[in-house]
Image (cartoon, rainbow, N blue to C red; front, side, top):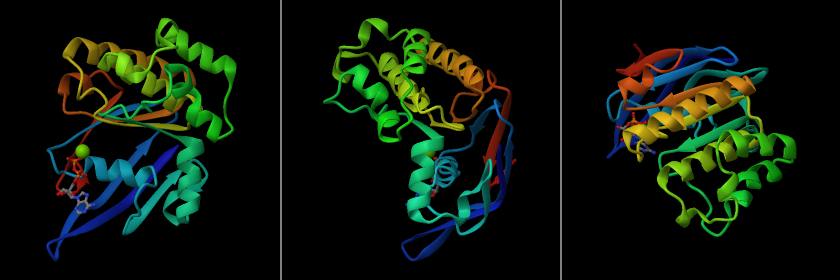
Length: 217
Ligand code: ADP
Ligand code: MG
């Protein structure tokens, strides 16, 4: 469902080019859950940004199902991100002024993809039932990340991208959150690509890839 060929991205730093991605090839099947590791600065976040259409590639192709992401306009990439890609970050990024219940459905409503039955199932599976009226600042890190995962999946995306989603959680909480996410992804059949520093967590997914010298090693 995701097919990346010869993807390249260069940044310029103090006038010098920094070749971050130098021909990345990557394929993900529907329902497949893949971990991506690599040294700090190896381009993991850059790769996720390009897949999500948050930034444009210099060369190569990204195809998500029937859409060639690398050919989309800025508006087309925004629509793709809204409708078909779920994003989870290390910092949770919940909206502080919204309750848990409203955070959960916020993006799904904007995308006009809100489904009350599915949201209810997410709340149950993520164990958020007793937290719906709280605000983000009243939640632990693990609870906040469970809300963020629920929000990302509420739109029933084709692909869930997570950039070090457990980086701010202690080890036990990280394992719990990952196990929940893994099961939910299996339930939805979406693809899941997760950047992590933890080789232990990477080993809990279907496949483990490493980014090195601008390519998938
Ligand atoms: P990782 O997530 O693997 O730690 P990143 O994808 O964040 O790595 O960054 C890869 C390299 O690209 C780093 O050298 C970083 O400094 C550089 N980089 C990332 N984004 C930008 C940007 N917007 N402008 C300039 N350089 C960038
Ligand atoms: Mg990063």
